[in-house]
Image: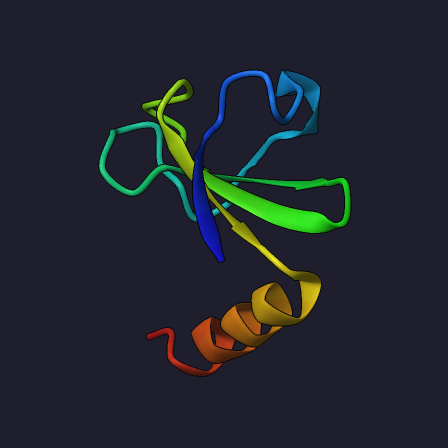
Length: 70
């Protein structure tokens, strides 16, 4: 896993906002699959840092989150 500046690394067209993100602020997450990695950023801070994960790590996180949601 690495934390990087999101500007210029992943094109804006690759980002998708989470269906769990609301338009009211708060929990706003965007994900992009680009160049063999999953990238995650705060949609309110598009020029800020992002987390880049290997596909296996992303799949593990998604599985964990699915098992632990209310």
